[in-house]
Structure formats: C-alpha cells, structure tokens
Image (cartoon, rainbow, N blue to C red; front, side):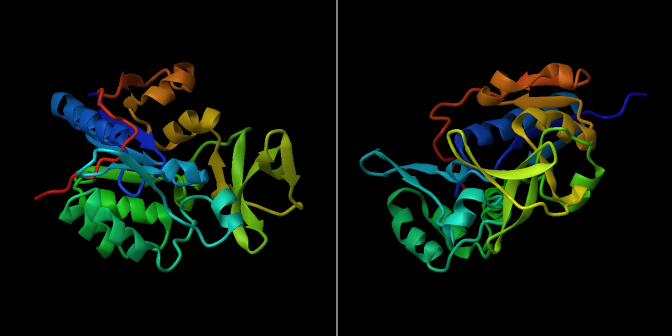
Length: 258
C-alpha cells in the first residue's frame, strides 16, 4: 500500500498578519487534502533574515488606501543580519501598532496583536496565524529547529547562524568562509569560527532539496515567486501544484473567526 499524501508548502514569516498569497496556500492545501487525504505540512522558513519579508500592507477601512507596517528591531545588526527567528521586537512596538490598527482591521485582529506575547518576530507571526485558525490541523516544521537541521541533508550552498557584534547573524558560507552581504558586490568577511550542522540553513536554490530530505512530501504547493526558481529535478518524486489565485496577493490577510 502507498503511504498517505503529505501536502506541503513553505513560506518565510511574511507580515504582522500573513499576506494573502500565504492564505491562498493554506486554502489550496486544504482543498487538496479534502480530495486526496493525508496531512498538511507548513514549512516555516524562519531562518531567513530579510526584514522586507515582514512588510504588511493594510487597507484603510474608510479611504481604501494601503499603508505598510512592519516590525521594528533593537539595533541595525539585528535588523539587517539576524534570522527572523531571532529578531527581537523592542518594547513599545506592540502598543504603538495597536493604536494604529483600528483604522485598518477589525476588533478581533487588533486584539490578536494586543494579546500576542511573543517577543521574537517569527514567533509573533506564527502566534497570529494560530489565532486566525490557519494552523488548525496543520503540522508546522521550522527551518530554525536544530533537530530539523541536524536531520536534513548536507549542502554545498548554505548559511550559518553565528555570533557577530553581540548578535547572532545569518552568514553566507562559501568555500568554508563566512561573510555578510553588505549590498551590491560588497561582503564583510567574518572571523573563522566553529559551527555545527544545527546552525545551518539552506540558500534559496538549495531549500527545496533540504526541505524534502526532512518532510518527504508527495505534493508541494508553489507560489508565483517560487515557480520562477524551483527546480523540479531536485525532487522528481514531488507533484508540484500551483497555489490558488487570489486578488491583492501582496496585501495582508487579517480575517479572524467571529
């Protein structure tokens, strides 16, 4: 007998409220599960470090104009280089954000942010999605989990979480050397430091194979951006499914149960 389907999709933390394209992946996954059975796995790539990923577009409830929100961070090193699972939310950010939100979202969404106790960006995003009911019946696998990293396949192109100026940063590893991308063609070389597999996360081009070595999924729901760079030959055993279309895909999904 064949094993039950494993329906997976992946995403970085992508906003104070998840973006609508991520919501569409949840919808697609649930539709597939209804058709095929099996389980849904959300590969939560919280090892990414780009603060632009968590920009959150919300429409003003009166004017319809979109305003962009984001987390703030404790310092520049953390903002630019720390992975999202270690970026800390400074005191005062939550209260300031809560004061602005009623013009953009309903009371349940405001309360979710007010009541979120998480002090780390990736944890905060996950807690809000849980409050929305998006994670019900979904297994979450985090790329920051040391057990996941240790169990995953070896890589030739990857990042390493390592110390730098009092913070943990996500440094690119090339030919055994660690460095931070400062922009353009400029890189900052870091001192040699020992590291283990539990500190390693994949690059964009190695993420699929690394993820699959742990998830062993049968179906993968790909977003529009992923379709441009995913190489199905890296995992020929997977059936790739395009996510359902959704309007205003880059804006936030801020609906909550009544």
